Image (cartoon, rainbow, N blue to C red; front, top):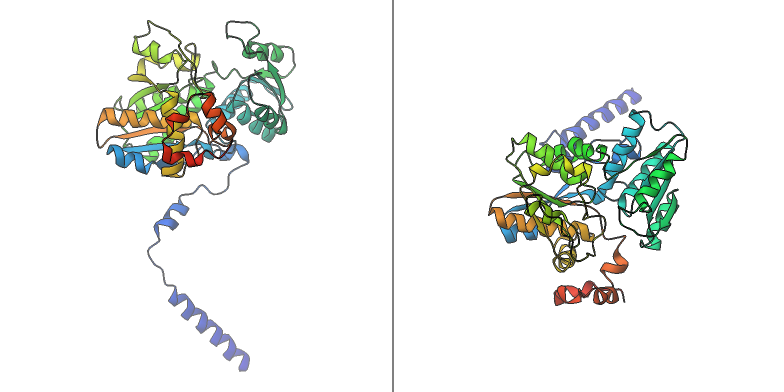
Length: 377
C-alpha cells in the first residue's frame, strides 16, 4: 500500500510538472536551432553554409541591405576552403588522386591553408610552392598543418620559374600526385556554382539585387555570379572589385580592349594580371567594375571593427567598400551581397601596426577616432 501510494504521488507530481511546462509556441531561437544541420561528417562536412551577416551601420547609412557572407567561419578560416575541397574532390573523381597520394599547389595565401586542412582530413600529403615574399608566419602555419613548403623567388607568371610552374613540375615528377592548379582548374568555379551561390539565394529568399567581390583565381566571383544570374533570369547585377595593381578593372571598363597595370596594393590573394580559366567563361556576365584604393580599404578595416565588431582582413574590407559603392549606385532599397573572405588574424602584425601603416602612407587614411585600435608599434 505504501509503495503504491508513493508511486501514485510521484506520477501525479510528474504530471503536474509537465502541465507547468505545457507546449508553447517555439521561440525564434528554437526555430533557428531546428534549422541547424546537426553533426557534420568530419572537417569537409563543415565547409560552407556560412552565415550571411547584415552590416548594420552601412545598411542604415545607404538605405540598402548590405550583406556579407561570413567565409571566415569556414574551418580553415577563409572562403578558399570551398575551392580546396572541390579541387581535391575533382582529382579523386577523375582518378588522378588515390589514397596516400600527394597534392601539389602554387599559392601565396589561403588556398594553401584550406588545402592543408582538407589534405590532413583525407590522409593526403601536401606540397606548397609560394613566393619567398610571404611572411614567415604563413610558412610556419602551413608546415604546422603538415605541408611541405618551398618558398621560391617571386617572378612573373610568364617566367618558367614562377611558383605555379614549379608546382606543376614537382607534381609531374611524382607517382600518384596531382597539381590542383587553382587558377585554371574550373572545379574551383564549380564550388561556388554549387554551394556559395545557392546559399546566398536561399538566405536572401531570392531578394538580392547585386553581388560584388574582388577576384584572384576568379572562382568565387565567377561561380557565384553564374549561379545568381541563372537563377534570377539575369536580374541580379554583378560588379567586379579590383585592387590597385590588378588589370581586371581596365579590362572590363574598356570592353576587353585594355589590360593596364598600375600601382600595387596591401591586399593579399586578390587582383590579377590575366584572365584565368575560372573567370574566362563568365566575362560576359559582368555588369561593371571598380578599383578600390588601399586608403578606402584600410579605413574600412577599422570601421568594420569599430561599428560592426567584425575583425576582417583587407580583401574582405575591399569587398565591403565595393558593396557600399554598388548600393549607392543602385539606390535605396537595394540588397547587395559581398564576401567576407577571411579575418584579420593572419595580418594583424601589419594592419594594426603604426610603423607598417606609416611605411605604406596609410596612417592618414584612418580617422582619428579609430586610431585607438592601432595597438602595435
